[in-house]
Image 1 (spheres, rainbow over the protein chains, first blue to last red):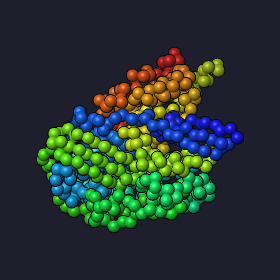
Image 2 (tube, rainbow over the protein chains, first blue to last red):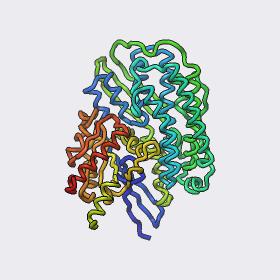
Image 3 (cartoon, chains in turn brown, blue):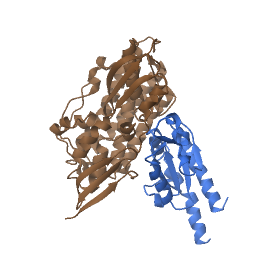
Image 4 (cartoon, rainbow over the protein chains, first blue to last red):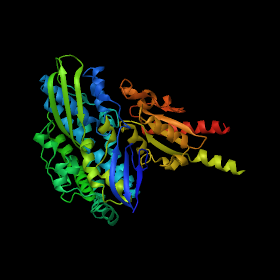
Length: 358
Length: 147
């Protein structure tokens, strides 16, 4: 049987972002997949030579619009640790609130796009309708729907008033109710199961050897979550990593669905235990030395490496994003998959190309 | 009414949009997608998001142009049948935004293809993107000689 080469992307209806895969097919079965990146590469790590370390917060927020808050938090935490700032506890709790809100909206967004990838358009619409509540919270509390820009070195820029806290609580109740109403569709619907169960399997060993991170790793049976490191206020909150064992697209869907509910719970815990006090402290000095910080993004573990040389411009900034780590596992999942399932498998790792290429 | 009149009526009442992410941070992308979903629901105005540039009237571009995707962008633009309108969404699509000094950034979308409507914002709000599409329809109308 002759092999066919099929280009997939960079502009493709199911892909919100440009990535190119060269698929080698035998009949309708994928034999191999070769990725081609670079369509979104901007080179923003090098911008640290022309923007000072305070201005870089606005740059790193725009590494990825979906998890902007978490990028900025990781960057600020690195510099705070480097310059020895003692961040107020209230700021740490507020960081948890906004980063978990980001996780909820990112996962709902993904469940919607994933459903759309196998043609379940009404589920896409429902998820995005629920997500708008989170966007409203973001807009009301920070002034912007997507890029919230609340982090500064030494704390956060905005506080949550009592009225906002109560209102967020009420909105989260509605979000939880509406998400639970979708549970029977997401978890036990015949259409969803037939398109995702047993598709794109990543075994436990493969996930470990290929260095998968985040929900992809947890769906293959590893209980690893960078939030367990206890950054921000996560050390004082109660949660367990969400784990599934099957390693297929259905397991990855289940992990992210359960994480939505987990994040709702975490926001609630953080709001209940929110301590009084300052929201930021002034930080003096300039960054000097080297540091690595890890946080958990909706897509997995995010790593920042920063090197400072006692000037206001950083010497080196390196960002290792979760999708970058999840591309080798994706290439291991694709061989043996039917062509019609390729969009489902590609989306199941929640690809964020603008993160990957920066 | 002649056949051309019918086609033109369809073009202006129900514009088909193709969206290309040209190196954006996803912020504007998810706002473009949010326009399709129940809260904003542009389908009630007849605006449809389609994947094929050969069927599209309006091209929505988000993000900066870089050296690799400028050929892809030009290719998509060339595949669209006329009369067509181009909307650049977000600060990056307008001028390069915060990334304008980065080494791999060519600049705004208008460095590669002619842009008819500019939608500012970082990221642009769904309301302003819908407004941009409405403004683009005026451009199509002018190109058709109906304005």
